[in-house]
Amino acid sequence: MKRKWLSILFLMILFGFSTCEEYHENFVLTGLDVLTEEENEFLLNKKVGIVTNHTAYNHKGEHLSDVINSMENVTLTAIFAPEHGFRGTAEAGELITEGIDSATGAKIYSIYGTTRKPTPAMLADVDLLIFDIQDIGARFYTYISTMGNVMEAGAENGIPVLILDRPNPLGGWVEGPLLDMKWQSFVGQYPIPIRHGLTIGELARMIKGEGWINNADSLDLTILPIKHWNSTMFWQETGLKWINPSPNINTMNAALLYPGLCLLEATNVSEGRGTHYAFEWIGADFIKGNELAEALKAENIEGLNIEPIAFTPVDLPGKATNPKYKDKEIEGISLTVTDPKAFQSVTFGVVLLKTLRDLYPDNFQVTRPEWLHRLWGNESLFSALEKTISFDALLDSVQKDETSFREFKKKYTLYEKNTH
Image (cartoon, rainbow, N blue to C red; front, side, top):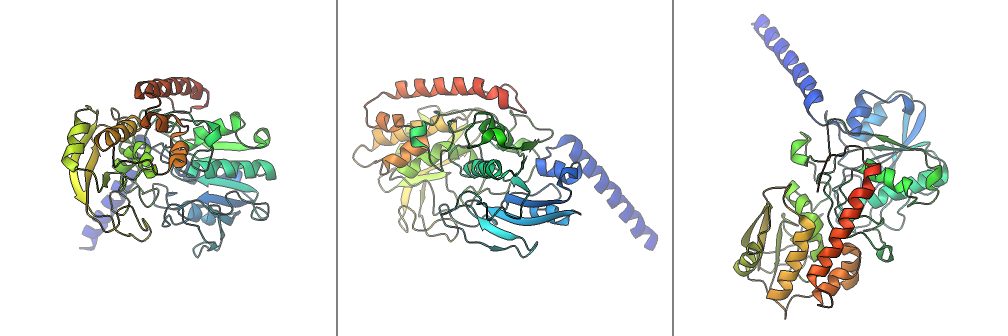
C-alpha cells in the first residue's frame, strides 16, 4: 500500500512539473510572472513601493506584495492604493482610507481621493516604485491616470519606476475620438481614444515619450514585458485567470461592452448598476424592452446578441449605492458579445444613444452634459444628440482620429500585429 501511494505521489509530482512547463511554453506570462521567475537582481537592496491592487497575481496565485516581501535583500516599505482600494472592494468614486497591510507590515497610502499622486513624504522611504495593476483598455478607466501620476512622482523625486506589464483585455483594437485636452480629467488624462489598444507598459512609454507628465525626460522608466502575447489576442486567449478589475466589471463580457456603455452614466438610462450585470444590462422606466431590442437588431450590430429583459436595481454594498431606478422594476435589454473581434463597443455606444433618443424623444435625457463631454472626450457626441451636427459627420470625425492614432502608436507598441 505504501509503495502504491509513493507511485501515485511520484506521478502527481511528474504531472505537476509537466503542467508547469506546458504553461510556460504556451500561455501568457505577465510582467509579474517574469519578475517572479527570471529577473529580480535590480531589486536587490532596494526599498520598494508598489502601486497595486487585488489584480496583481502571478500564475502561481502569489500577490505582488507577497512576492516582493518574500525576496531576500529587498524591503517592501509602501503600498499605494488606486480607485477601489488595495483590495478592490470600494465603489467607484468612494474615498479610500489608509492603514497597514497585515500580511507584510507595509504602510498603505491612498492615491485616490484628495491625494492622487504620491507625495514626497509618502516616498521618503522608497527608492524604487513598481506599478502592477490590470487595466481594462478604456481611456476613462482611472488606473491609467494613476499610473501617469505615479510616473510623474517618480520623475519629480528621482525615483525609478518599473511597470510590470499585463495584457490589454480588449486587444490592440482602437476605437473612439481622441480626447480634447479642454476636457482633461481623471477619467481622461491623455489625448488617446476611448479604446486605446495599448497595454499599460506601452501607454507608459507613450506618456514618457510624448512628455505628458512633468519632468518626463528625467524619468527612469523600465517596462517588464509580457511573454507569449500579441495585440490580436483577447483575454479569453491568454490562459490567465480573470479577476474582476473593479466591483462593477464582473465578467469579460462586461469589459468588452464597457467602452461604449459607460457613456450611459451621463444619461437617465441605467447602465445596470445595482445589479450583478452592470454594463451588460441597461434599462429605464420609459423603455420597452422588446421595442428597443428590435430597433437595435435592425442596425445589424456585428458580434452582439440583444435580448429584452426586466430588472430591479437595488443597493449592493461595495458595488452600487442609490443606483438609478432603485427598487423599481424597469425594462431594458441584456447584451452578450458573441464575437469580440467583430464587435465595436464605442460605435455601438453611439448607435445605442441615437436609438434611445429617436425612440423616446420625450423621455431620454443627457442629464450630465459635462460628464458626457469628459467621457466622450469632446462635445461632438452631445452635439449629435442635440441634432446640431449629423451622426455621419460625428462618425467620420471619429474614424479620422482612429486612423491617425493607429499610425501614431506604432512607435510605442511592444507586441503589435495588424488590428483594426
